[in-house]
Image 1 (cartoon, one colour):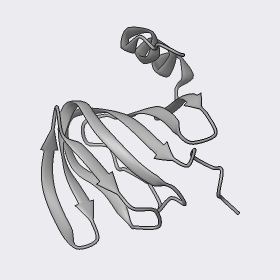
Image 2: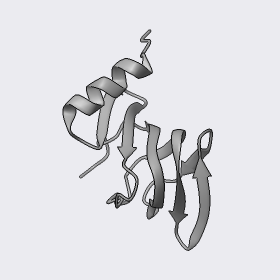
Image 3: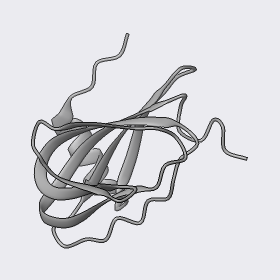
Length: 109
């Protein structure tokens, strides 16, 4: 069993200088903290894994295919693997818990 403290993860993320911090990797799934500053461009490309985002805080617009939807704290977003998706119009720093199944990078060629 693992227990993660969000305050510790946020500090580790800030210290990394990266947008994404993978903090758990198991056989069946992985978890990351993904943070996009207000006004940032989300450079994601489709993944080889299914993905769930939980919006910890912030405001943005979610784009998947030709569909858009505003998202903010508390939103839970599921996206199938290989589907083009991203966040746009990030008006408040967007903090996301991201869960990949199978683990991120495990199916990449």
